[in-house]
Length: 287
Figure 1 (tube, rainbow, N blue to C red):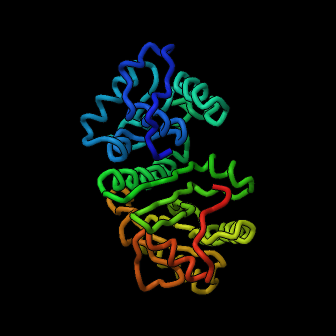
Figure 2 (tube, rainbow, N blue to C red):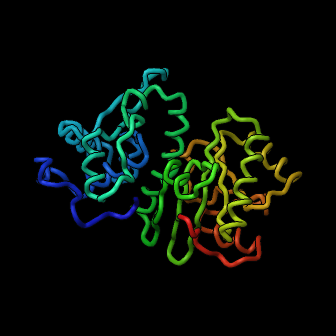
Figure 3 (cartoon, one colour):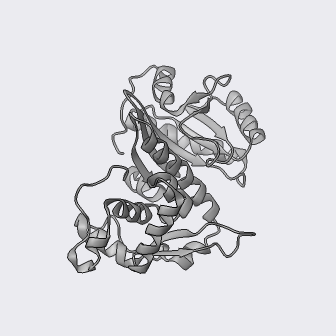
């Protein structure tokens, strides 16, 4: 999802081929895969500035490829949220020659606007969009893989439903990770219970990628670490907290459970987790 394809993925039947850019195509792929992104998230991930992003979104909306909305249940002003239309999903599905991007009612803008977990989905996508933006501005950095919750669950074939899966690289160092984005609504015991599924997966797949918990505040993060100290997990766990739009995910913000007095950059977590488990760092065979 993160690398740009040199060929344009739209047939002449769109009657808009000459107006669509390679970056437009990437916008549409991201929306199809990740359901909803704000204009601000798209701007950070793919554009030099928000003004240019708004202009391209307006073009895509005029072509019937994107719908936009502002959350009706949110207080105060909010950014425009973008959703791929059924027409876009049909075009992308035809291009890949399969059903990976099937049409779903979940892509309907009204249904997404009314989702009770919209804030959670927006937070998950913010983390990955910030990584895309950092990679765009940093030589040698790349978000090589970004899989949504649905795509990750399909690939794993288990009851485990991470909020996302990523592979982040900076030069020769890399880290694969599962993301758990916590908004503070679940009890800590439920967060810990998720680690059993990750432990089973790590054992069966023979990999060491860490599970990353993004928490809403420092107090909740400290509480979780106390529980992790009392019940050491069988899989590598690292945490951070705050607003991902202001706390850069690639930076030295990650507090590993196996060394809770330090904070590491994202790319360092991969090798550090492997050393902790005393196994070679290897890519996840299913993802």
